[in-house]
Amino acid sequence: MMKTNFLKFMIALCFSLVISKAATAAQVLHVATWLPPSHTMNVDFWPTWGKWVEEATEGRVTVKVEYGMGHPKSIYDLVEDGVAEAGFSYHGYVPGRFKLPQAVELPGLGVKAEAASVALWRVQQKYFAKAHEFEGLALIGMFTHGPGYVHTIDPITSLAQLKGKKIRIGGGIQSELGERLGITPIAAPASKVYEMLQQGVIDGVFLPINEQKALRLAEVAPNVLKVPGGMYLGSFSIFMNEDFLANLSQKDRDAIMSVSGEKLSALAGRLYDEDDVKGEQYAKEMGGNIVEAEKGGKLSQEFQKISEGLEAEWVESVKDTGVQGQQALDELKEIAQNYGN
Image (cartoon, rainbow, N blue to C red; front, side, top):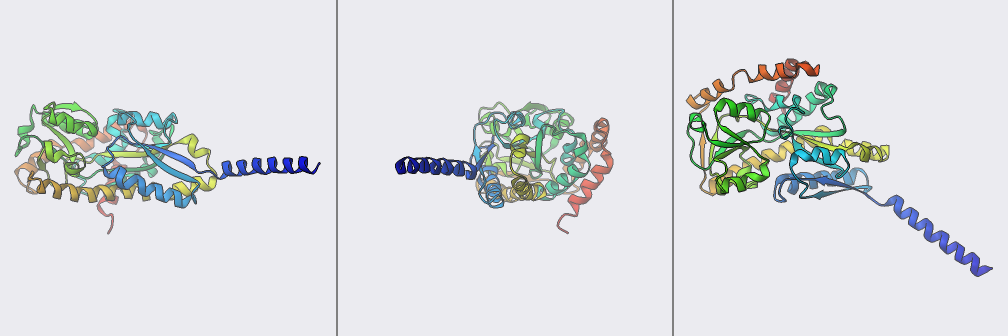
């Protein structure tokens, strides 16, 4: 009888330990990425957020980055379907779905990525959220890369020289600019541009200067034409699977959101700003030819003329969303241009 009772006790103890272990096991939050391991998003951004999440949830949720998840435009569906629990992507890769965030991409904002990212997040929360463009996803952050320029195989000293050139674009406002510049647009994700340039499939690419180092453009497109303030900004969103988030305890949901939102958006923008400095320095060290147009000079005036009317076109394009486009755009500019003051 004593042996039987002891055996029952041991079975019950083992069972309770298994249940206890299962209950305390960390939830793994898999992040889908489409950029190479050396990119700042994977070297700095996700590890930082992962540390924040683990600390905020006291180890109950951990973050793991997963590579090779396909074209960045598919990341939205992968996360919504639960193939991955979180991810990020560029709005321009899904034409027509994300019209509102393109407000931040318009030329003339004249700020760096951190300021633009915080402004975009705040305006998204105040104005854009009501349009439900991210339906099916839990939006946890938004950001931009730094000012975008044109990187080419051959030197470019005038915007007129771009006419007819095969230039990779990422979509969004880049598409509108490309049409006005008379380029032959080639749509492709940023992760493919090195190969395309190397093989001569394209003559150049619209990207921020950090990619001279991050995507090794200095090796294949060493000529950079810089317009004061940049030609555009590129906008991105960071999102999670709604079911994964809903299945966490309220405590852990709140913990994750406490290290997301504006804090996460600012982090992404700040890292891109830091990467821009590294990218330009690297390009110069590699012997790159960086042509910087004079503010108010002929080339700057040429670009200003080319970009005239883009803001009005954007405001008109979002009328069907029910969002007060001009008011949102004006507030976005105010926030961005006064950020840090």
